Length: 482
Image (cartoon, rainbow, N blue to C red; front, side, top):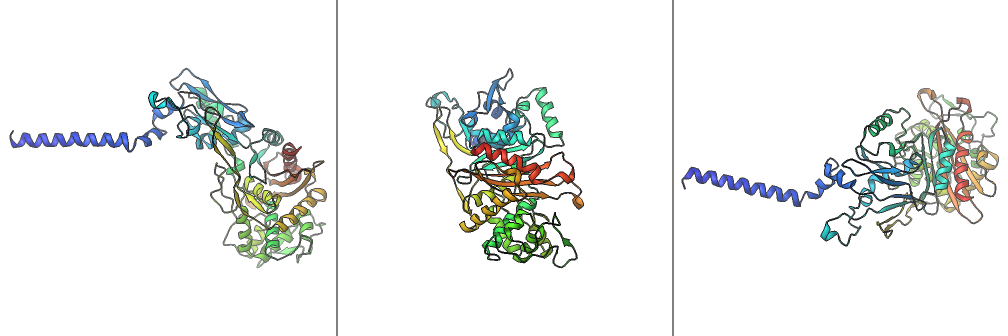
């Protein structure tokens, strides 16, 4: 063989060896990456080749699968889709998946390694999809959804003892079944959803932080008691009315000029929602102490997973004293999700111990055998038992004698706090109406609820936490305990 031919032969052999090495690498080391790549059409074909496992509410499936005539043999279906969309998310043949449908996709489609198929080693057939059982109580979910009605808003109900999410409602909602397939109608439904200015696809319960308004006064009151600024909710505070913000000429006033807010106790200040008391209290404490207390409740934590991740609720930093005072009444740059405010009340109801919110109860295989069970987890101790007890008592006064009267439920002990948060430039927008509360029955069972109504279609002067949000909280508490 001459030299030129030998060089060509060696070069060709090297190319063959490189090709063999590359294909071996793809089939071995990177195979799983390609198998999970959502842009790989084989992944989608395999996923929808069989019925998916289901998401359960109250042991009943709220999802299903329907046969199609296309290459993707099955598509996702939903029972009461708009009611449970904030819980399930969606699974679409074209547009992917979100929330529980996404986080537990491997369980639902049968690719989770914990799912066993005895004949799989021979047939290479994928195991039957497993199920995801949620913590949602269908009565609580339905009560919140119906009470919100045509309003824009959200509500979350927690079991304080376990952190189980009993209800998670967001309105307006959407029907994930309308774009679960790949047809023309599905594409039009998706485009309509994306273009809807009301943003029904946003989970307002978890993903939309808003100024919490006067409901944040519970956090400031907790900080005052925990740091010894005041020793009791019945001790008079040093609070002028009106109150001039430190270093400014801006005067902070109360909603009602006749409210007994001057030097009021924390109990009275919560009962009448005195801005002057909590504005000065926050300034006296200083932002570091208020922030430390807020963070014990979950603020400034960007990793609150239910397992669906909640948006971070923010207590701001870098404020001067005047800004700190405004933050004490839930304004300035304070931001909170309904989940976050439900966590605040849940900790107070549970004696100061905050449980991590959880949406999933257990995971089962296709035959109903449990492969994973979720135990309650402690997020941390938010306040002492004594502080929690005092603030529960003061919240009861708010409902029995104060601004939260619409939350009363016969036969239950109920405590709450209203909030009306400004928004828009120079407060030009319709205020947000908040209500946070807890209820307890004679047997000691509890529920904690947070509700925000962004747009209740009410006149500006008629927007209030008691008028718009408290009835929604009452409906959910009654559904949980009555």
